[in-house]
Length: 282
Image (cartoon, rainbow, N blue to C red):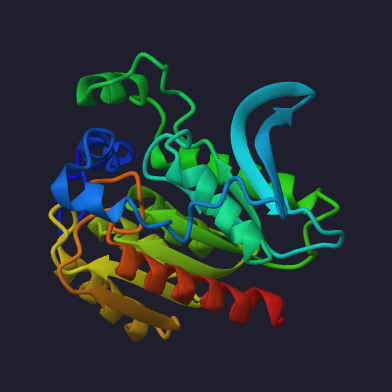
C-alpha cells in the first residue's frame, strides 16, 4: 500500500501508507529476523516495573470517542509528553512498547489510535480502503490533536511543548501536525516519505526535525529522505538525517521482518537524546 508519488505518497488513499509493511510484518520473521529476535530490543520494555501504562479513552461532550495507549514513569512528578503516531493499528506490539520505552527514558508516551475506524475484521488492503474511505489525513490530524489536548490535562505531564514521533504514514502525519501546531517542539520521523501535496503544509514546519531512513527501504525510496532534508534546510527548519546502510522498512520495529538490532539501538538512542535536548532542557 506504500504507493509512490515522489516518495511514499499514495495518490488514491493517504491513509493506507503503512498497510503493506504491516501485513508483511505480522507474518513470520524469516531466518534473519528470527535470529535477531533473540536479543532484547531497546523498545521492548512494557513489563518494566518503573513504568505504568494502559489504554485510555478520549471523550468529547461527555461521550467516549476513540482510544489510545499511554505509558508514563511510575515515579512522582511531571514529565515531557511525546505523541507516538503509528503507521498501522496501535495494537501491534511495538507501538505500546515504544510508548513504554519513552516512559523509561523519562517521557510520557501517548499513541492516539488514528486507525480507529478500522474494524477488527479488516485484514486486506481492500478492507482497509473501504473502512478508511472517508477518514482523510485532516481527520487524522484532528485525532492527533485530541491526543495532544488529552495530554495537556494530565497532572503528570510537564507544562509547555511536547514532542512527536511517527513511523511511515505516521511520520508524515507527525510532520504535518507539527507544522500546524504551536504545541510541538521536536519531531522524529522514521521513513516518512515525501508527498507533493504536503509541501505547502511542511513549509510551516519550523521546529527541529530528526529523520531516520534505511538505505535499502523497499517501501519508501531512500532518496526521498534526502530530498525532504533539502526542502527543510532550504526553509531554515533545523533538520538532521540519519541513514542506516542496508536497512529496510520498519528496522526499528522488532515485530517486523526487517528489524535490525544494532540499527534499532542506535536510532533509539539518537531519538531519546534528541527529544531530551529539545523537551527536557527547555
